[in-house]
Length: 116
Length: 110
Image 1 (cartoon, each protein chain N blue to C red):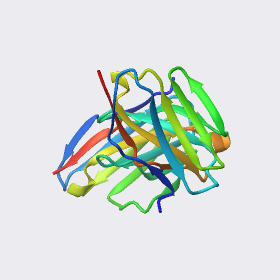
Image 2: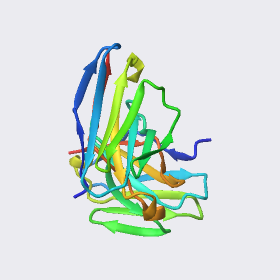
Image 3: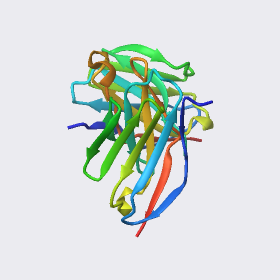
Image 4: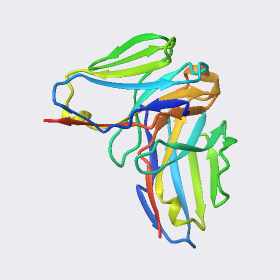
């Protein structure tokens, strides 16, 4: 089973709202990722958690706040977003750095976010 | 120059044709190569991954890597309308980062 689940599938929020995106995997993976994808563009890395610790932040604005409560869960807290933040937000997971160069990322279906 | 170049297409072929999708890269440090398929408004689905130069086959799909030319390909045989999607090549840079191509939009016409 290589399934990564994400909720909600769709989210519409105003610029003053606070919302959260959730991601879950039960593959025993120890690395989890958040990506942002705009239409007709490849995914852009936002954050990486390795063994529940934030290891990479790709200079993402503070209005995006990631959280990794345990090895199976990953959240992305959203606050005071802008309309240009509307995109498909993808979660991915992989075995982690111990898998070495062949570490492979598996993606969830994404949350389509619209900011009004 | 982008690290990974991929023709965005769109590419349209008749059902049953052999499809060739390609990426070139400039960083010789890339060692691990993946192809993802992404249907409209869905997440990328891992199709194939390969570590070494040469060919790797899985059903109707063949992934080919030529490290000397810094060139990778994905071949789809007996293409089906259900293969219509965007195909993304991806390569490992560093411990946890992937570098993606722009994606090629493919349409298989019945």
